[in-house]
Length: 250
Length: 288
Image 1 (cartoon, rainbow over the protein chains, first blue to last red):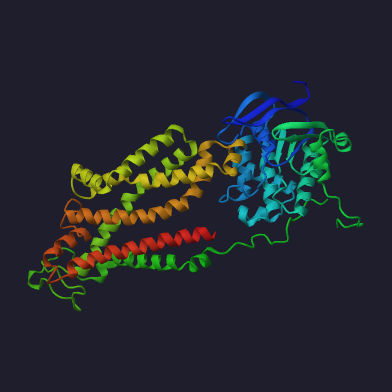
Image 2: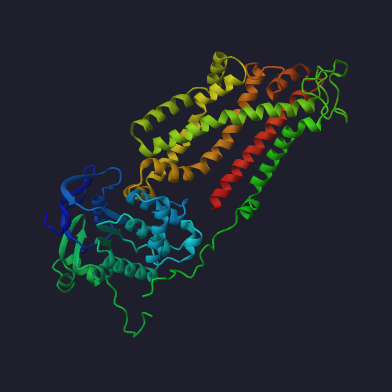
């Protein structure tokens, strides 16, 4: 493992019973780097991410390869509401993670949690009264989930389609939040998505996955300009361009 | 980009509806709660309501019809039936509640452990529950009641032994399904200890369902207490109890049918009240 590498996945294979789900996947990640894993549903990208976290669903096993990592990792999930205890107020949930991971006192944990939430752009009203996940919007919930992941002070942030369940306008805000936090805190990131545009704008390197295998792995720019694999070509072509309307994004 | 922004125009807390108004919109909970409250109120205040003692005999006024003096008439020993009925409610409801406490706690706790950790504990509990469910319930009750002697103690022991199974089964299933949800996995990967996840996160999520089951189970328990009393291996006379009252009135069923019917109806009334409360609570938590 090179000095600067925080995560190395070598020839990872995952299978459910006899069915191969991920085969021979290898990549490495340096400190502070971002890697995008792109591919269609069922291509094994989420499973790869879960294997890194050690959170494989029941019945799925690692059949080969090694995952080496010397830093802690935390995950941001696809469905923010599903990743929060519906019956526990959100600030308490963030504070709890700080309490157990950083061994702070209950009071200090809460203060830290509130600071973290402010950093993530959650409204100040949470300081006065804590709220349940059902009382927050999807985007706000996702910010809470990110806060919980960051509360572990992870070396690697694993993002499992963190914007898929959100409105398009909110997607962009979440992505901006993640990039600015990464600049500030310097964690490495593996970003799983089926949206090539999002991955390309976030990550300088991309892996394209299809049917459990990496079909292309290159610098984002080179991959976009010069895709060698027909599947990558197809993904690229599927990105719809906006019609020529000046300022239509506003 | 400013850091303070709200993702959606929906005002925060817009979905929050006050608890009181939710309860008000759940008629079954209201009616059931009211019925149960009336019963409890009567049981608590009966010494002030009735001038009679539950075991006070008046042999010159036996088997009287209902009148202003004796609201539900008197039994074969001239005891006031209404007074006895409500004192019996005291006995039976007290036992019903007390006998459920330990089984409820054990059942919920074991169910959570089995559902969350699975493995051998899950197998053991499944085995136990399946065996005990295949066994006729009343047979177990009667055997244990005989072994430990008639009276309250027998009922407590019996229910400590078999009562937890219902809760363990329900909670085990629920916990196993919650376990598969992302927030539990997330809590695990974020480094929360298992005990903490179980007590702080799993427990509040399984409790509503467990309480609904508790309401139904209490009805079954009440019927069991009354049945044991009726069979003469439950509460022993002269302590008033609906079961013994039904048994005592049996010989007069043709002349004074209400002696048996009234305590029977009291059991039905309590059962309806509890089941309405259970239904109402289930509705209430579903709405949330």
